[in-house]
Image 1 (tube, helix red, strand yellow):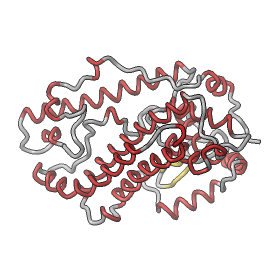
Image 2 (cartoon, rainbow, N blue to C red; image 1 turned 135 degrees about the vertical axis):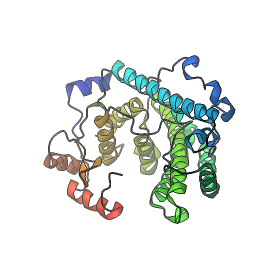
Image 3 (tube, rainbow, N blue to C red; image 1 turned 90 degrees about the vertical axis):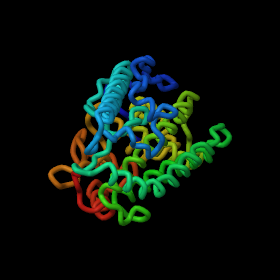
Image 4 (cartoon, rainbow, N blue to C red; image 1 turned 180 degrees about the horizontal axis):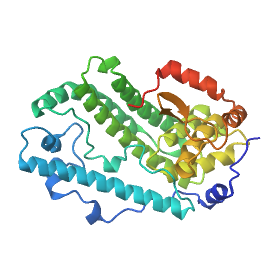
Length: 345
């Protein structure tokens, strides 16, 4: 009914993936330890949400010690991302894949402890603290609610649909708030540029935290040898499982393993063909550099266009039709209507 993954390299790779996701190789404690300079700013392996004291060295009239702390934070995060990248590449290579993605496309929670936001040149530390005082109450409630939802998830098999729904809600809660912060709408209406930057940074870190927690949950599902079937958990829960996977961009191996699980369930309509199409494109752009269904777009010279395709737009439309999806042109028109003109900012 649906065309399977036919590329010899990709198909053989998918078949080599076992019933569980290979855990990322972790570097030794010495390599990943928090530097002594940063220890005063850390609790539970990272600064508290909204604690940016370690950034003091980025602002005018900083002391030499402040500058050293800021530089140590920058080096720590850069080295962490480099280790993470190497671990991901090594894992995919162990599966027979040479990934083509050259840079990380999402925040990796374990490497975002000292995530550095852009601050306009000339901004004073006092101005930053005032902006933070305005933003923190807006974001803290969202962070609390997201954390509470994740803690409330009962991951026993008997409660799988409910657990998936709770995790879906936590995911959408943070992403919805992040979109509002980007657009400066709803509770973020009226924020200035500095306040917006702080809100976006705090919410991005919370989003990465939720994604990391959901990724661990999904690994457990895959390790169990199964994937949520529509006939077992219902369409809503099956869709929730897909969405959490779609957002697990920091773990391409997990996404690839989930794609294989979903592929095996396509012919019996135990997963959504549309969900499968979106995940296929998400994964294949990372490991092969091309997508089939034209679900992933980018801004190019001021226009929104599909990222690199396996073939042509007509071919993508044929694949989309088998999955019950609208044409590429129809989807593009809907995106333009929903999100407005394309921006490369």
